[in-house]
Image 1 (cartoon, one colour):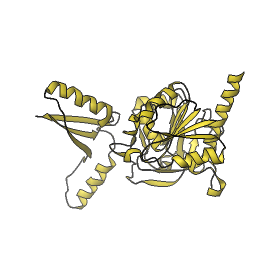
Image 2 (cartoon, one colour):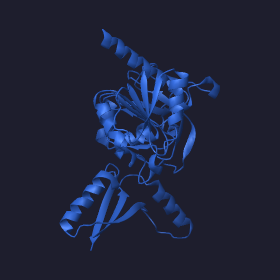
Image 3 (tube, one colour):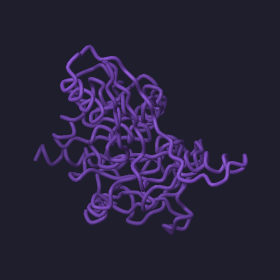
Image 4 (cartoon, helix red, strand yellow):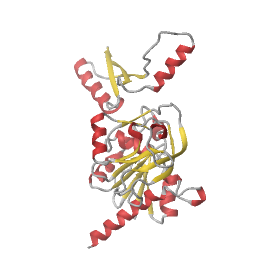
Length: 237
Length: 80
């Protein structure tokens, strides 16, 4: 599969994502500079973590106006896979590709540690390799991951199973104490109404190899690849 | 024309920075302080002499970039 990793000034998890897809999972990876205007030939794109444009004004606020983001809008509208991780999620929110906004963490701290997230929807292109309700250990590293949206939008997300990941305890209990940042409803990741755009604060690209102590993040990328493979088989038929 | 723009979190949205400052003020002995809210202040020069036109432009800037209207409110003031 051909996966594009977007690179904004200040992205810093772009090479981690490329390493996972290329070296660990054996896929073709193209690094896409933010000034590019085309995503032709790609099956999926990843908006990586980092501090695009130094987080000036608000996280993701400036990056969303990068030339490549117009192409991402069209790419998403065509139903192709878009994954935003951490700052990538923040950019997708600012771009309106996902609903809601990020507030400063409730504690005001930049939090960098392992979290547990519960897979609330395992029927998505990003989680089909997971069991429903499976608990994944994936690290977070952010200062602005306190997800907020208005009550009507939140109700819609819940009703349409758009909440894909919730912060939980090690044994899968979704309780306020398990939420590291104050996110509404313990939200750690959501997908778009069409299901092809996912934003998540935890970093799956940081936990894909046994050597690094944890492989839980592999499920996310493996799901995407399975989804794309099945789609390709269906298209050939 | 100069535009002076204030962007603040909407009322009802938790402002942890405001809360931290409130506690710091309290421990410094500034009692009877409540509802501290932190915001952003921006000013910019517009090459536009017509106030009505400038207002349209500034409003559009705020809606599109300077404020995230899901969580923030904005106010502006235009001076010659």
